[in-house]
Length: 221
Image (cartoon, rainbow, N blue to C red; front, side, top):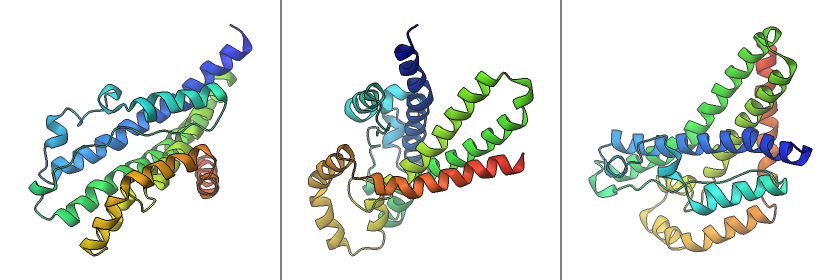
C-alpha cells in the first residue's frame, strides 16, 4: 500500500468514522427526546436508530466529509434533520427546546465519554503496542474534538440549526416566525462560511476545550 493511500485510509478511520457515529447519536438524541415528549413521528419513520443509512444526507454526511478527507481539509458534516410534529406536543415551545437541545447535548456527552476512554487507553498503554496506542489515541482525540465542534456549531442561534430552535424558547412568537422565514438564506450563508473558512473562529474555543479534556485524561493517569 502506497504512503498516500495509507494516509487516506488513516484519515478515513480517524476522522470519518467518529464523525459518522457522532452524527447518528446526535439525530438519535433528537428522535428519542421527541418520542419522550409524545411525538412518535421520527420513531415511526425509523429515525430512532443508530443506523447511518437512515440519517445520511448525501451532501452533509457523504460528499462533503469524504471530499474534505480526500483534500486534507478539516472534516465536518451534518445528517438529515429529524422530523418533529409540534402539534402533538403538550407544550410545543418548551418541548421543542428540549428536543433541539438534545442533539448538541449528546455531542457534549460523547466528548466526555471520549475523554474517559482516552484515560483508560493511557492506563493500559503498557499492554498495547505503540502503533495501536498512537492510532487509537489520535482517533479518540479527534472524536473529542469533532463532538465539541458539532455541539457548539449546532448551538449557533440561527435556523435551521438546533440553536435557532433553542433560542425560539426565549423569543416572542412573531420574532421567531420571521427568523424561520430566513432559514433558506441562512442555510446557504452557513455553507459558504464553512467552505470559506469562516468557522475558524469557532474552532479556537473548541480546540482549547478539547485540549483541556485531553490534559484531564492524562492527569488522572
